[in-house]
Length: 189
Image (cartoon, rainbow, N blue to C red; front, side, top):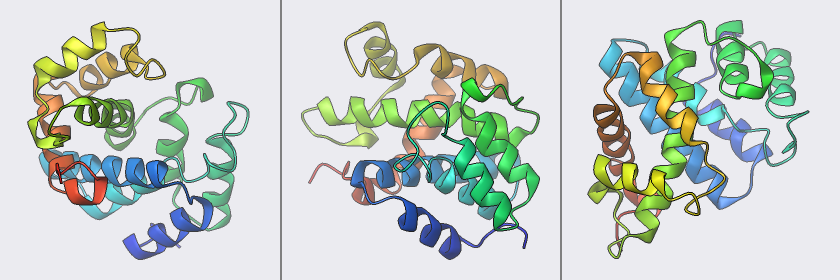
C-alpha cells in the first residue's frame, strides 16, 4: 500500500480515537513533524502522517504492554511501510526499538515536547501557544509538579538526537503548533 494519504490517516485516527485531547495531540505532533520535514528537506506528507498516527491506538490500548505494539500490528496489516511502523514503535522508549531514521528521531523529539508545550500554553493567562517561549518551557520543566506525566529526560534527549539546539527545537515545535492554534484550542479565544 505504501504510506497512507493524510485523509486515510485521519480516518484511521478517528476510527480508533474519540478523545478530543488525544486528537489535538495527534494534530500537534503532525504539525511539528511537518515542520521538521521541511527543515530537513524530507517528505512532509509522510512525516505528517507518521505524526498524526503515532498514538492512534492509545485510547483502546493504553498500557505499556499494548501501546504502540497493537498500533504497529494494525499498520502492518494495512500494508504501511516498515519505516513508518518502526518510527511509531520507536517513539515509545519502553519498546526498545532503535530510532534508526531521522523520521523516527524527530517523532521521539516532538512527541513529549508537543504535550508539554500544550500544558504550558494552557496555564498562560492568554492560552496562546504562540506566546510560549523556550525560557517558559525550561522554567516549567524544573517544576516537578507541573505536567508530572511528561518525561523531562525525553524532552531534553530529543533535540540532541537531531543535532538541534534546545531553544531552536522549542521554537520550531511552538511555531508549528501556532500555525494550527485554533484547531488545538490554543489561539487564545
